[in-house]
Length: 449
Length: 120
Image (cartoon, rainbow over all chains, first blue to last red; front, top):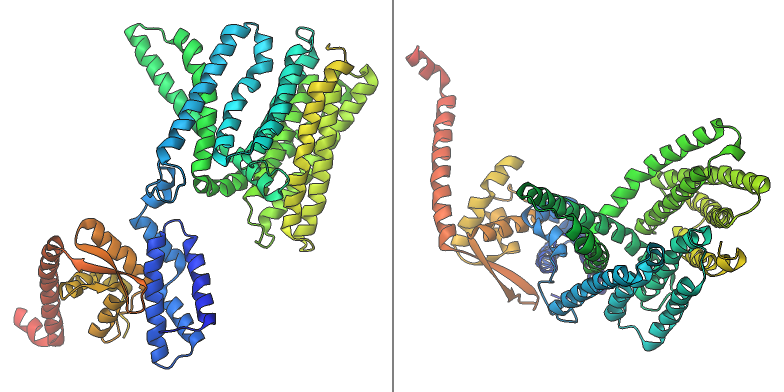
């Protein structure tokens, strides 16, 4: 029986809606669609018009949530099979599944070998610390380059800054134990990570959507990496204990072999897991952000209370300022991650209000921090550490102020949520530029002290 | 008359197996048959039939195969297996016992004074 175009469109929309359920496979959707069409045809035969027939048929099909729940109960593996290492139907995947696994494992071992070689040859701990990122990141970027089939131009565009960074980090005559060296060690990974991001987005770094994907990827990578680290720690701990009872000390092997291979290798494997199936974590991300946003607000308010109660900001310990910087960066990461996990079409809700509260609290903390820093600089003069911290704080301030402004607009329904998202993705490279300045320019300005 | 939800759920498996014992069918046709057999008073939530069919398939009571409908769409047909027939026979026995017990209760309930007097 021929259905009208309108009816086809309705069924198409319904199909799309059902397909979004993880527990209902495409074959099941076919089965349900066949059912729906039969039902509609029979109802029309009894004299209902197209719309009525469609509505009744949908109603009889039942609440989609409940039906999907039943499917999930019967097919619980569907929610997890995403994690199965090899896709079951190979025709979906472009490359043979074994090849990707092979490439990933080779790269993971390669990263381990690089770190191992670094520890063996670079000897000096400070030199190793400067080069650690340089040793590991090419393997991660290499995975993306392989996966996204990067063009030679993009690869060259990545290699040039990478080489420059490597030269700067190794040629600069850093004063041993100086703060510019420490700053370079801390900021180089940020630059490298953004370079990895360019590889991740397949060279299309101008696209806002792809940048947001990279933010999502970063958040999910952290989760996967943590899970892998926890599992690995349990495994190693048990082996350790068991061997100790027998009288074998695992510690030398652990330090020399297991850690240098496992820590960088897990990074590559975690990246692959995120790639292999984003959807599993996508379901966790909104939950995590919803749990941690209120908790972070409480933490910030407590800190604010303590800081203001402490009085004289000049006496604030330097260590505290550094810690607060770390906290603010963490808040920003949470903010970015929760924005990346949000469906931009959803109307503003309670959680968006909470997010605004988080931004305002972070702003207040940032303002206190800035005052403390400026007073310290006025009192004791500037130093590389202080200028680096001040710069980061100013960047965070601009980021947060604009985010707060935009999200207030979104809450009142004046702006689409996408504007807020775009601001985040547009602003991200600024951090990379700042990190590059700290690595490249600071040592020159402060005479490598 | 609407049949209670739990009763519908309890009778779903033997009904589906029994209908399939008469011949292979696809989902919508099974539901239509249920509706015919009960005079329209056993209304299932249509979507729920499929998880049930999949469970029966996992248990090995039915087997499925993809075919094509008259209109040329993909359609999944279900057939009862020997294991399903054994399960059906087993269920049939259980239901016979239940139905028999219920019938006696209904009969007793219809003539309460006489029986109570005799027992007293």
